[in-house]
Length: 457
Image (spheres, rainbow, N blue to C red):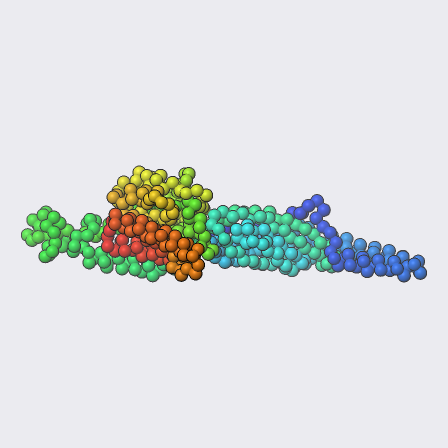
């Protein structure tokens, strides 16, 4: 992960948690209670009352001395340091650095307040810090959702050298961190990048058959070449037939269309369908950009969507990642008609459109199928949907009761309907895939490389 995606460190001085941010420790109260035990024999010897009073005065004086020697909240500095980029379902470590600017050592309890999206319970860490020293603590977070997560202030409870007085400090470490998709998924596709390099070999094989229209070089005419590719000016100069050779277009356009409607909120394990689609979308954007293609993104719901015009480069890839990190599924079905119309408006030339979505279970033809069909005459459409694990599992099960039989038959009917809808898309020329969520990235990348290899655009 690029260091630029790692949240910046936050360092602040402590401040009193409230107006009277100090108290006595259980040790001090225990010593006072021990002195109070002299009250029972004092019924028989009044001089023990003076001893009890002297004892309490000594403990109170020691408490005051301990309190005055304990560093003030402003003498403590706390920093929160992120060691890596927050990514969905990726366990990582957050460090806290406590600096003691006082003259004596302190025993501290540090309570950080991460967002519940990062950690369900706030961590409380114990540490001893010497005078002028810095101690480093750490705790783990496991992000459960993409998007922006708020980190709250940290609290410090610390004691002086005698352990009699205790102070409370609050450190304003508020910050907002962004949880990105698990971009390690793209890294796992390194083998796919190696295969992408092999596309060049396939291009060389295809040149003799006239695939591609980007001019590369001139060579002598050979059997099987087309006469329309003969360069007559070069032929006249050299006195023999000279033909042009071409290579497939290297700077093609890939549009990633991401459905953020209610159907994508379905959860399978720790991830939603949208999470899986986001992982696959970024992996595709990264590999397509490496292959020299221009990548655009349209994430849409029922209202206004997020759009990034096709481009390439590291900055463009970062912009795509920022959008993918914050896109969230809405409570209603997305406006597929509007999304298809937008692609038709902004992309006039033929392009590869990779549409991550799901198919609604309706008696009529789903709106997303009709919308996708409109793109097929102009663009090469890759229609990618996640296979519903519960539905396929139920459809393949064996009934034990009559009620089970009806449920299984209904599941089989739904599965067959989904298969027919996707088959109709394939007959119209689309590349329709339905795979388990865990395999979505691999299958989409493989189909993309196949498109490049066969020069389908």
